[in-house]
Length: 321
View 1 (cartoon, one colour):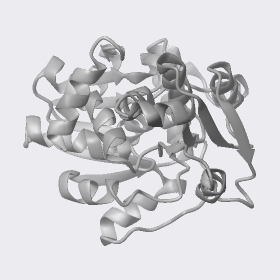
View 2 (cartoon, one colour):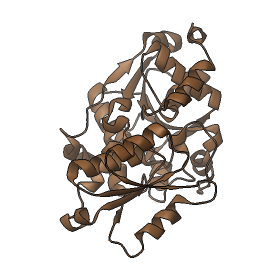
View 3 (cartoon, rainbow, N blue to C red):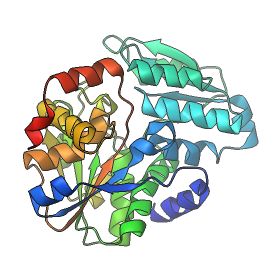
View 4 (cartoon, helix red, strand yellow):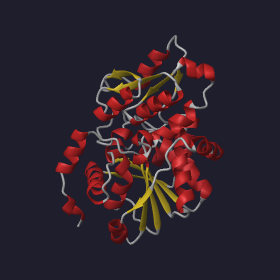
């Protein structure tokens, strides 16, 4: 997989943004450590998902591209596939839940995708997609359980570590495990001593349970504000990589996630979606005790106005001192 990640990095060169790495003197002083944020909220479509979507769709045959692609997603993968489809002239059909954030739904449609919505309380997105695939020649691009998608997501850590050199630990959000598995493979191949942690919401801790028990657990439609982690379970391809390369999994509360979003907004002047704030939430709550140089991947910044308003109104910038 590491060779696939290196190839994906070359494929994405000049296409994906080389996202910035930011620090916070407030956090560095608070933890007596160096905290480095890899800001994929500044990636194309506002999330790391662009990397995996481009890496997978760009490698399709001309016949597959002409027939179009199908994807299912709560939002960021949907936008990414739609954006890449527009870039490469590939028709896209996207299955999205009816409760997907409005900003993500609007962006996906704006890129020209044909959006099919479903009720997450009564329908399963994989089954909806399977019905759409019947009798058609569409190519399915899943949000995480696909080797080319995993390799594309792994370029986040590959790029991050090559820029900042040594990291004592690296924190990555986990939904279906595409970003985390790719991050762990890249990190351990570049520096085996770097500790890799996956961070999940307490309300969506299927990957953590799976990691701890060695058996995949499922939690359909978990009620977390971090919509990017509402996957029912980790993937059959991502889970073995997580078990092999990830050092540990940690979970954070909804309150901690919101506090992290507020910190990014008030103190670092960044818009970060709840899923993207998981790493910082783990630091703020002590779920991860930082020592040395700590890398944190901010996975995305696609948060709608009402959700951000609710988060900002539930706390105050003074909570950070």
